[in-house]
Image (cartoon, rainbow, N blue to C red; front, side):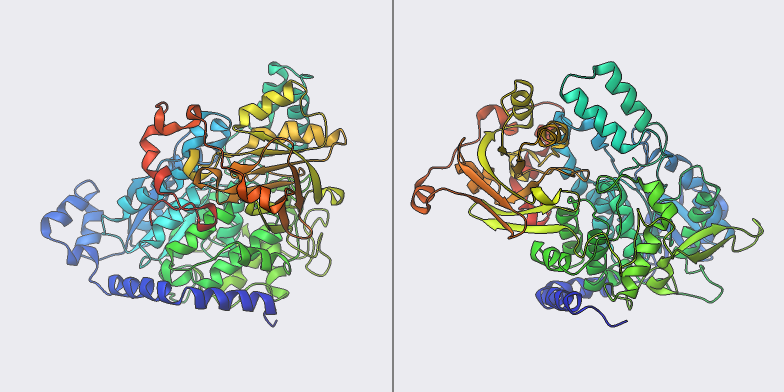
Length: 612
């Protein structure tokens, strides 16, 4: 299949834009890759320290036999349901490595916070920056520099991007990502959201709301909606960094252990009967692979958080992308799946219908993904159009086989590229006198793609919630929530705003959100212009908006503007961030430790990076 013209053009533009940065990155990669292996290169005392804590047979393999040594970086903790299964993975990985004549060491652990726990609390102000902390933690783990390959254990929102950024700074290592899968379906996401809306109106009390939430989030595994965590997994498949089809197999499924063992085989180049040299991750992740990830995100209506995270991931590999690239791709990439919040199905239903394998196969067949990329499997990206099946003798070398994911098992959940849910990916770039912003319209009703209404300006998420509770928003309104960008307070997700805004829209009011914050991977049916850049704290135009200003959000024309005469707008002074919101002036729950990150953070469109 011939590559789509727009996909080709965007890729070539990214390649040209990144030429110097990527060239310097590859030069460093090759210089590092061409060194002697760790135990031969390092001093005797260094090597002794590195192997002092492992069994004698493993020491012999590493030092004398020069067997491959796999570095494991884990984001295990049992605060995150999705990461709790990782507790047993290191022993499993070591066992499989030894069986294959190799060794494995847990090189280090990285922090992993749950946004579901911290939503609406001060802890969310650390959330975005935890990505860069995780990247640094990954670098600290791998800087022991005794490894021939790496396995990275992580799933959720900031964890996978952080692990990936860290790994790309060790781009000379073959690397495979190892997930653990989603929890079984509980209370449906639609039913859960309805209870949340009822609670926002005071129709359901705390006891009823807690009961619903506990039925929805009830076991080990990722949350079952298609938010940032599960979007991560889709992108890892599209980038060829997983064992194919690994993303959405549940933790309790017998196939899961086999897939984890297969990750060891894969990173060692033993995934097939013929020898295969797994490419270094930094060589694999080029502009074509980044574009494949962007396309997969758009085709599945994935998390808007990745318009920040994948800019940072690409930069870590010496590649420069921006929101124009996403927007242009969105015009030609069809929406192939309907998974909550873009539909009623959850990720388990998505997997049963064909899942990532079906979507990738359709995109490859339609010429919307590059099929000539490197990946961790000898069969290339085409292998990712399949689903794994457990079978055969458990003592045999290969206990897994792969079958085509197509055709769709449920066209209410996934459809072929020839008959998509929408001809476009549902992501729009908005520009105007309020700055640059993005909006996801894949689940916004058609009659709400344009909203024009008076502004109500809020300085915090809590202020909007109070105004809603007090009945002050029972009208057409554009809610402007500012001082929520990276430099202001670390750009927390404003997930708690979804229920009240949904209630207002459900009453027939024309409402929208405009903010320099994030709305979360679970943003859905209410039009929301998010990530507005430059942010208010950096002198952005949101700091000029006043109550009553007429604001027009037009996702069809791609505009976001306040309808104030140009001369009046130019003369209007910028508001200043209220002192009580300045976290640099106060302390509490560790936020003061991140003051330097806030000061150094780049804009959202530049990935909100703190390490450049």
